[in-house]
View 1 (cartoon, rainbow, N blue to C red):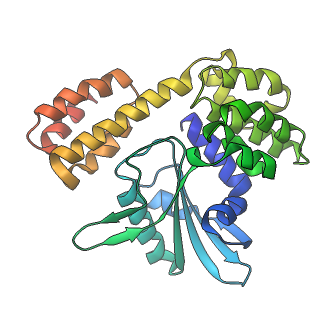
View 2 (cartoon, one colour; view 1 turned 120 degrees about the horizontal axis):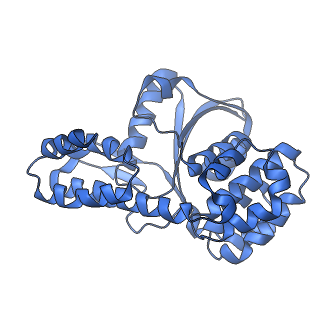
Length: 288
């Protein structure tokens, strides 16, 4: 699991009711994560969460929260796939939400072809007003502040608000750790600065171990490197779709398994020369 998946997982587990209220417009009486479907289908990613909720009127609904670090053109089809699978299993009203962390000019909140038109909620975190979130003091959203509009200069303030909040110590540690991890998406220096300041409490968070392993304590540039990999991955998926249309979608999962950015870069020429998605698949299989 990548460090950003861990950060979002921590936030979903701690703040899912607030996310659902804010992003799906539902006041939640009670909720629980559904854990069965991810084991039943390999297509489900770790950044996707299904929450079975009971709203204030005692009506059951199912909310899908898909957190995307970078936009991928396969997102609409993926979220439609997840929605259909959950709907078949649970037979309740479904609300689908995609939370996008980094800017994209091609992000869209619907998919349409000759048979299907599907619309979902797209929340662009990078367009949210960081100052407004700071002034509201909604603790669950403070870890996202570095990614928001004008968030870089308000990150220290978000850190102080979390640290001085009345949250239980473990939740506070999780929030501070998530803030540090997510700040790596926009700055090579912020993670090390935040961790150095709050290491005494962050070490109590299960998510802290991933920071230590990734070398974020020394302010290394894993956030930037991961961003380069994700950007290259999105470009390759887009190129495949331009060349071969929806027939290329199964290749996206193979590409996502590649961690080396240079190897991904070398596949541009492979895709440009290939005459079919099967030819690309053979190259990928030969490199495993």
